[in-house]
Length: 396
Image 1 (tube, rainbow, N blue to C red):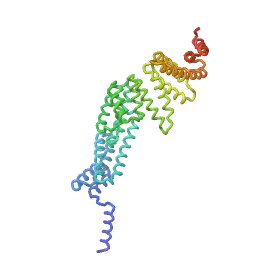
Image 2 (spheres, rainbow, N blue to C red; image 1 turned 120 degrees about the horizontal axis):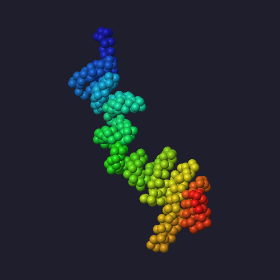
Image 3 (cartoon, helix red, strand yellow; image 1 turned 180 degrees about the vertical axis):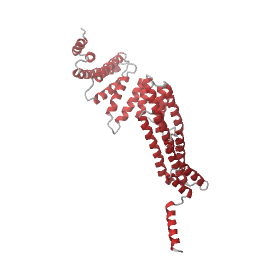
Image 4 (cartoon, one colour; image 1 turned 45 degrees about the vertical axis):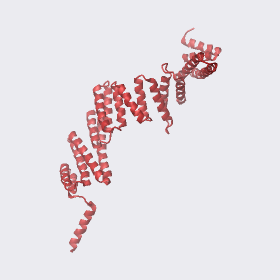
């Protein structure tokens, strides 16, 4: 063998070691892709697959060629062509991974690149208030990675926002609903999309359907705080205030076991739940009192209204217990109810004094403080505070 032949064999061996079992069709397609001849690359790869139908790299580079052709179509404003190419690219990448799992990282990297590029385009258009263009790019992002529900969620939320800006435009809300249903059917586990659907149903006035959807979600995700708050707000719209309060309390319980400081989130929820539970239609006095107490502990300076509401509840609860004592079946139960009532009035005087010492002009505070003293049997302090109440109110 001549020296020249030996060198040629060494070179060929080196090429083979670098390319492995890569076919000539795949090698040609790589060159075509580099030359931006994407359609030519696709044609060559399909020709090669007729001879080697299980060549994983051929499917990978089909994905690459379709991805690149999508970008070209976008530059030419051919969004439909770009969408079809992204769908084909995703299909071919998936096939490549199926045939050779070692290609997974490269394939996912390419799909993620497509997805991020189009998602960023969509966000830029959205920030510029070019909503139709934003929707188009979000749809391209979804075509690039159909496993991700984020683009569809973003389109739906965009439509929900636009509908809200247009007095809850039912046409836009229904468009969002149709879109959400399509994706939920394909991805039944899409939790976030189901919550968005419930929001749309609520906006459309279909609260019974929304409630049923929320109930199903709560069964599957009982500790999701965003979901619980959504359910609470829907319950408020349905005037189911006790249910709303219970949802807020569940959120507070979850926040209090969190490693993070959730004081700022807990405070408004405690006030809202307390207001509902202390309402005359519910009257879960002790829980409402405890929630106001929780809110007061979170206030740097105890708020006048928080203290007043807690004072009023102590008085109302004490009166309720005293009425129950009047109809008690046995002397023992009567004495027990009287004792509980006295404890509420005593607690009321403590809150009331703190209130009027901090807010000297709070006339209604003096009234309830005086009434708590009266029910406690302290007529002297009762009259003193009621006189201040009458003076502040301008009555004799």
